[in-house]
Amino acid sequence: MGLSLPRILILDTGGTISQTASADGSLVPCSTDYIEMVPRLHDIARLEVLRLERMDSSDMTSILRMEMARLIYENYDGFDGFVVIHGTDTMVETAAALSYMVQNLGKPVVLTGAQLPIFAPGPDGLNNLYYSVKAASMDLGEVVICFGDRILRGNRSIKENVHGFNAFHSFRVPPLGELGVSVRLLDHRIPRSTSRPCFFSSLNSGVLYLPMTSGSSISLLEGLQDYPGLEGLILGGFGSGNLPAHEIPALKKILSRGIPALVITTCLKGHTILSLSGAGRKVSDAGAREGFVLTAAAALQKMMYALGRVGMEQPGFTGHKRMDAVYRLLVEPVGCDLDKSLLPLV
Ligand code: ASP
View 1: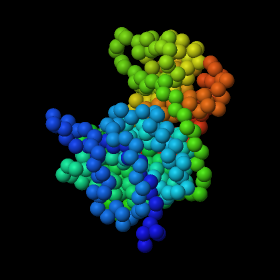
View 2 (view 1 turned 45 degrees about the horizontal axis):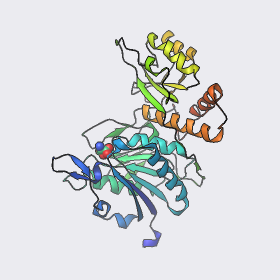
View 3 (view 1 turned 90 degrees about the horizontal axis):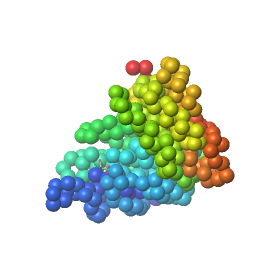
């Protein structure tokens, strides 16, 4: 019986699920082997666990994300699916980063964690881990978040709740699956397939996300004009992607250095349409591009991936040549990250 069970590789990076209370009551990572606490986990899968770190995910790095992507790629043939245990705070960033670094997946990569430590009373860590291992053996071929009562597209998700057991949501695409008495997968998911993944190993972390503010006399972009470490910029625009007019001169200066800028909307629903208003046109005339339905997390990680990939594949490209190559990658759909067809109407 055991040998016919699916083989699942768990990458453990910690987060609240693995933490315990310290002397002052705050949660800190602990080293206990908590995966064994989940009842009947070994009845549904043959597990292998790699403990990478036990960290609060606010300290997550691009280096560790690259290591996770490498491990998934290198172990791809030996397993039926992958589970990444992760803190909830930056889980969506890691999910997006993995979807860009390991493309063309034919197997599930399932991220999960918990709102409560697994050692505390409360069911969410045990449930999330159990259902994630189950999801990792199911008919999915993409990076997902399995948490609470839903399975969500990883590169479309946001953390929406600090307290509730449904900590995540994807406002611009319905859940891919529902967890209840049984696990129900929905038709718009990317199914399991025999496709071979491609691996892009490098993230360029010189990227900044700036959501716009209204009424402030301080320009956010002015101080960035000559910032040496800046390689790419994500701007959170109002509504359809508008920026305050007083940011445009500094934006032009940044773009003239060959630094790509992508504008997303800070709204939870809908997408950018820079051509809609004069304010938006000024942004596109300056040379920035629009991120359509990308979340801040996905836009940030996609920019890091695009800069990293151009740097690896076209090391001789500089200035506007490099910027154009990055823009070409940013508008290329990856793992349905730009799919507008399932946008909810309300
Ligand atoms: N601060 C924790 C983390 O992201 C929160 C959690 O896991 O829920 O690691």
